[in-house]
Every structure is written in C-alpha cells, then in structure tokens.
Amino acid sequence: MTSGSIPNAVPNAVPNAVPNAVPNAVPKAVGVYGGGRMGGGIAHAFAIVGAAVTVVESDDASATAARERIDASLAKAVAKGVRVAGTFDVVTDATALVGCSLVVEAVPELVDLKRDVLRRITAAAPDAAIASNTSSLSIDALADALPDPSRLVGLHFFNPVPVSDLVEVVVGRRTAPGLVEVAQGWVAGLGKTAITVQDSPGFASSRLGVAIALEAMRMLEEGVADAADIDMAMTLGYRHPVGPLRTTDIVGLDVRLNIAEHLERELGPRFAPPRVLRDKVAAGELGRKTGQGFYTW
Ligand SMILES: NC(=O)c1ccc[n+]([C@@H]2O[C@H](COP(=O)([O-])OP(=O)(O)OC[C@H]3O[C@@H](n4cnc5c(N)ncnc54)[C@H](O)[C@@H]3O)[C@@H](O)[C@H]2O)c1
Image (cartoon, rainbow, N blue to C red; front, side, top):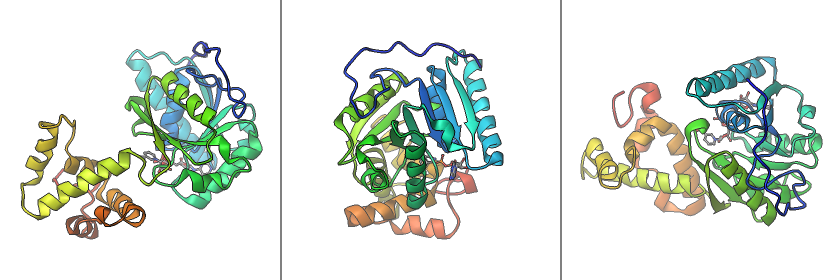
C-alpha cells in the first residue's frame, strides 16, 4: 500500500467542537474502534481517500484477523484499479488513537460495550469527534457516556462498506450542529452520499426497509401472491434491485426479527413481526446462511 496525499482541504469554517476536521475532505488521521466486518470496511473507505487509519482491536488474534481482512479488501480494490492514497495500521492499544481528529466506533451492537468504548476513545483522543456506526441503538443514549455529548454523531455505513454508496448521518439531540455539517463533508469526501436523519428508531433505512419487508410477509401469509411474485412487484414495478423477501433472506431472518421487535417496542404494533417470520426463525430457516428462508438457496 502506498502513502499519499490527503484530498485537498476546503478552507471553510471549522466548528470549534472538531478542531482538525475539514469539511468536504476526510480527516488526515482517523481511528476505527473494532475492525470487524463494518470497521474493516470503514477503515478501507478512509484509507483509499488518503487518511492514515488506526484500527483498534481487542486482542492480538482479532488484530491479525482485522489486518488480513482490510489487506484483502484493499487488494481487491487495487486489482480493480483503485489507488490507495492512505495507510492503515491495526493495534490493540487504544492510546494509539492520540492525534486522530475522528474516531468511528464499530464494535458489536451492545450498549454497555459501546459506552465503555466511547469512554476509552475520549480518554485516548480527547479532542476527536466521535462517530458511532450503530445500526439500532440511540445516539442520545450512547452520548450519555461522554463528558461532551455534542462530539458524538451517528455515521451509519452500509455493508459491504467499500461498494455501498449510502451513509446515514444520525443527529442526536445534543450533537453539535457544526459536527453534522462536517460529518456530511466526510461522507462526501469518501465519495459516498449522506442522508441526514434525526436519532430515531431504525433511522430512515431500517425503518423503511423493514416496513416493506413486513408487509411483504403479511401478503405472503394472506396468499396474495408467492414470494417471487411479491418480490417482482418491487424489482420490476419500483426498480428496487432486490425484492423485500429476498433481501430478508440475504440479511438473515433472525436479524430482521430482532429489528422488527425493537421497532415494535419503540414505534408500536405496525412493526409487529408476522407469524411467518417467527415460525421460520424458530424452525432455523434464517435465509441464505442456512440455505432456507423465503427461498431455497
Ligand atoms: N453487519 C452489518 O451489516 C452492519 C451494518 C451497519 C451497521 N452495523 C453495526 O456495526 C457494528 C459492528 O458490526 P459488525 O457487523 O462489523 O460486527 P463484527 O462482529 O464483524 O465486528 C466487531 C469487531 O469489534 C471487535 N471488538 C469487540 N470488542 C472489542 C473491544 N472491546 N475493543 C476493540 N474491538 C472490539 C471484534 O473483535 C470485531 O472485530 C455494530 O454496531 C452493528 O450494528 C452492522
């Protein structure tokens, strides 16, 4: 991998909350806490546009796995002609985050773990802006762990990060307005598109995606049409690249059941999981990963 230049900084008003950040460009030094599926992809995305990325992992074995994951992902991009303008390193000591102006946390979706990690990030990089890649936890609830909650914003990347164009910028009640603007600039600097969403259950993407999928399941239960035809109503009728039931198979029926239960608790009975979803999960039909979901794989 080559070291190279950071995309040109746009000299613009830089909010006090994030002293080293530059709108419309990525920060020069970025930390990623948790180098798994998402963290590895996020490290990839920042490294190719020129950042020096420091990935923090929990132990040596996980660090080795993260390094191999990111190397493989960058090698794949290079094979397609992508230039890697930045660098990455994987460490197990969070103090290496010193000097980062942005740290993105991408550890597993456990509120206590994430709060603990946010505190570690603040201790290691007290001036950094912090982003959480949470897909379902409240940014406000996570911000409670920080001495300065205005420094936390949601950056909800999509899987796989290197080829996904969308990032949700999730705005907590106490997120600094300047940080939101800067975060939108970072997303643009990654060559991706930001949508800005207030901190709310399911943000925009999960809430809409799950709403359509649950309705598709209810239609299946009612015998309105079979799975392939329900999916085609959306692929051919609305130009969705993949139908809602096939998408559920790819995501995992268990994953979608968890999200639906969460949204039902937060937003009410319109997100109640249909019987067919509960039955299939109970039967171990979790979609593509088990070979059987709404389709046979
Ligand atoms: N997988 C997806 O499709 C997806 C999409 C969007 C957002 N997310 C969110 O991204 C986050 C991470 O998900 P993932 O799928 O990458 O999980 P993952 O299990 O693949 O990766 C988590 C990584 O965190 C590391 N880790 C765990 N505890 C740690 C600690 N104390 N210190 C440092 N590293 C630690 C693990 O070793 C692992 O490499 C979650 O909040 C998830 O909800 C996931």
